[in-house]
Length: 565
Image (cartoon, rainbow, N blue to C red; front, side, top):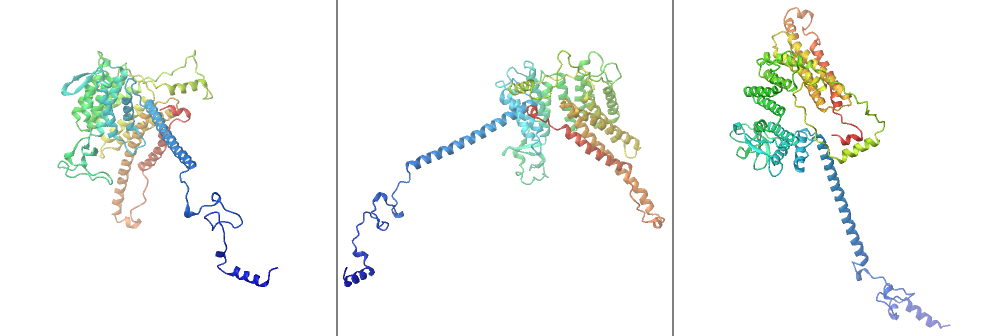
C-alpha cells in the first residue's frame, strides 16, 4: 500500500491538462488521431483520410465497366437504326406493292421509271393531302416521259417524226403493246396536269409555283393578296410558265404513230373539251367531228348509223358501237354548252333510245366439268397457296381494254350511262325554259332528273350488294348520283324561290286595300308550297344517298384485303 502523499500527487497529475504530453506514447502509424489505444495500427489496415486521397481513378474494374457501357450503347444504337431502317424498307415495299396492284406499270420499264409513274398516277387520288398536288404529279410524269423518250434509257427503237404544225412526235410501232399503252397514259396524265397548271407560274429564283393573278408586274396591276404564312409574291421578270401547254401533249398524241384509233379518239375528245373550256367553240366542234370520224371507221364501207347533218341516230337493225355513242354524247353536250339546244336535245334523246335497245349481258354459267365449290374456311390449302403466289409473284399487267368497235351491253355501267343521259336531258330542258314560259317544261326537266337519280341509286345499291368488284361501274354511278342530286336540289330551290315570290305578290296587293285593316295586318300565315316541301324530300334523299355512297367506298374487310388494291 502506497503512502497517502504519493496517491495525492498522482491525482493532481491526472487532473492536469498537460498530463497527456508527459506520457510517452509510441505510435505505429502516422494517423495517430484514428489509432485505437487498445490495439496497434499498421499502414495497410488504416483508412485513408479525405485530405490524403492517394488512389487510382481508372482501375481495371472501372475500365471494364466503361468498355461494357460503351459497347452496350453502341449495340442499342445499331439495333434501333436497324429496326427503323428495316421498318422503312418494309413500309416502302408494301406501299409500292399496293401501288403496283392499283396502278399497274409495264414490266419492261426500268425500276425508277415504274416507281415514278406509280407515284404520278397516285398523286391526283391521294386522300392524305388537303388538295391535289398537280405540281408534284406533273414533275413525276414529266420525268417519266423524259426517260421513255430517251434512247439510252427506255426509248430504244423510237423513230422521231415531224407532224403538221411543227409537232414533234415518235413512231412507236416497234414497241410492245404494254409499252405503248403506258406511254399513252403518261401523255394523257401530262395533258391533265397541264390543264390544272395552265394558270400557274414558277418563280425561277426560288423554284416556287404561284397562281398567275398573284405576280407583281405591269401585266397584273391588281394582284391577288398572298395568303397568310405563304411566301412573298413573285415578280413578273422572275416568272415563267410552270408547265407546258395542254395542246402540246394532245397534239403529240394525235401525231404519234402506234396508238389505236380509240386512244386517239379519247385524246381528241379530251382536247375538244379543253377547247370548250377555253371558249374556242369552233375549234372544239372541229375536233369533235374529227373524233366522230375516227369512231365511224369501224362501220366503213357501210354508211354511218347517224344522220351526217343533224347527228341524230337513225333507227336501224344494227346497234351503234360504243365509240359512236360516247362521241355523239360529247358532241351533243358541246352543242348544248354553245347554246344550240335545238340540235343537242334530239341527239341525246336518240342516244338514250339506242342505249335502251341494247341487249342485256348473258349470264355466265360455270362449267359442269370443273365446278367451283365454296369453302367454309379461308385456311384451306388452295387459299393459302393463292395468297403465297400473290405475295411472291408480281401482279400481271392487265390486258388491253376493248377497242369500242362493238356495241356495248346493258350492264351496270351502261345503265349508269343512261342515268347520265337523263340528267343531261333534264338539265337542258330546265335551263332552256325561261321564267316567263309555262312551268310544265321545267317540271319535265325535273322529272328527267328524278328518273336519272333513281336509276343511278338503284344500280349503286346492286353493285354494293354484288360480289363482283366493278370499280369503273361504281365510279360512274357515284359521279352520276352526286351530279343528279346537286341538279335536283338546284332546280327545286329555284322553283321554291319563284313560288315564294309569287305568293308574296297577292299578299302585298291585299295589304294595301282598306279591307285589310278590318281583318288584320294583311300579312297572313306563310303556307308551305309544293316546291318548298320537295326541298325537304331532296334533303332526305341526299341523306339516304350518302349512306349508299359511303357503303360503295368502304374497303374490303379481312386478312385478304391486305393483298388487294
